[in-house]
Image 1: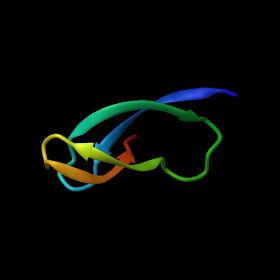
Image 2: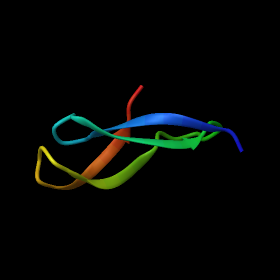
Image 3: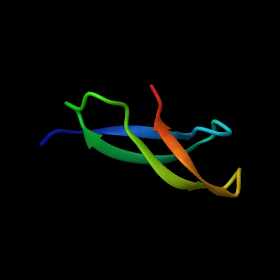
Image 4: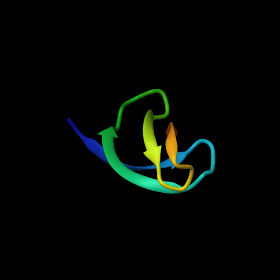
Length: 49
């Protein structure tokens, strides 16, 4: 399985604070709920381009 490095950004404040890897052949943008240090709460983090 081929993996691609992606950067996750907070949906609320936009800070880019997580790096991860995901499959290359996915159809949707990667999204996960993570803790944001800047907001101080768990928010949705989306894959950036």
